[in-house]
Image 1 (cartoon, one colour):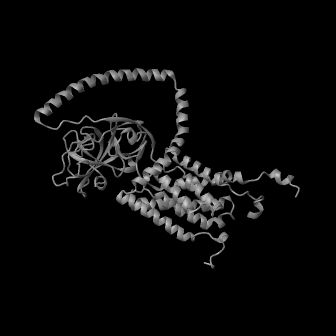
Image 2: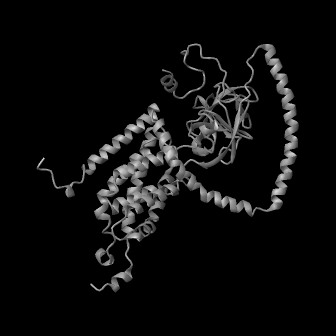
Image 3: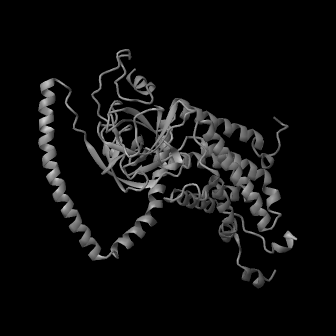
Length: 305
Length: 172
């Protein structure tokens, strides 16, 4: 006790000890987050702390947009208005046709006893900004759990699938784009019904169909639509069109690259569909598995017990 | 040489200035940047500055906490920036006595090394968790941030400079 230095010389633990402490703390968090997904509650709290700063950071952009919009030419607005009106007319015609067709399909489906197609709820959302993470392709949208969106929901725009809502915060959510390396969509070639899985190709902004045999019947220009087999994406939505098929004699698989139809990297608005699914359980699955593609099966189990 | 250049003593730093500078840096980091790889990391730069200038007040704990905030705000793996910033703070504190003796270009060389090191730590973390390498442009962001070092050090030392006229009028 009497050998401790006077308080004005005390500098706490040595820097190297501090580094070891904080590094191990960080590594623990990293493993918990990346491997087990246990860090979500901490993340929720931290995201709430960061939220006001993020909102404040958007202010200058909003201001600039507001000023630019104020001075936007009125004639341009009028033209746009007329074009939109014409498109609305067309769309309403299509909608009427769709209504009657949907009714017909529903009655036919009832007739054959098939499960009725779910009418999915959709929540319009605005894409706020691209994620700051250079390692992943993500955007942030202005709808969160407070607005009723849920993790795992598919996100679409007017011309096809944009991505999947992978993390829902209170007021904003992160959407992983189709082109992200870790994002996969079950698709079907519209021309011949061939099923495949489209993976993001990262920086190139394309999708890749993996594990397609070298002699597979896919041509450049084929439209890929969702097959709906995973129960996450509704079937029949356009995903991408094939731009290149490379068949190499030395490889077992063909390399099929496709360009997303939706404005994955450019759009401003998107629809968040509800992740509703009526898929039956897998025959060998445990009773607690709800059939929905859940990335972390641990979590519902922990909540339920 | 360096002593000749540094003519007047600085006032002691106020805690509020440090907090405010970190808040501003977070704000700048959360701006919707068009290109995420080229955007300079203002929090890392500010952290490096205070660790060099005030190694007893700003250190690894500050860096770690800021890193967690940035992680949550950017929606990346929790701990990625925390680890990078703790390493950055450690290196900056270790170099703090050395860096202040150099003139600005040499200081910037040190800072470049510090920031690229922090970026490399984050890169290692992401590669270990299975991300793809996003390209060498990743290391352009810290280089751009380094170019902001003279501006940042002038700006952040501004509140500590006493007006020159005060010295001349002093009777002593």
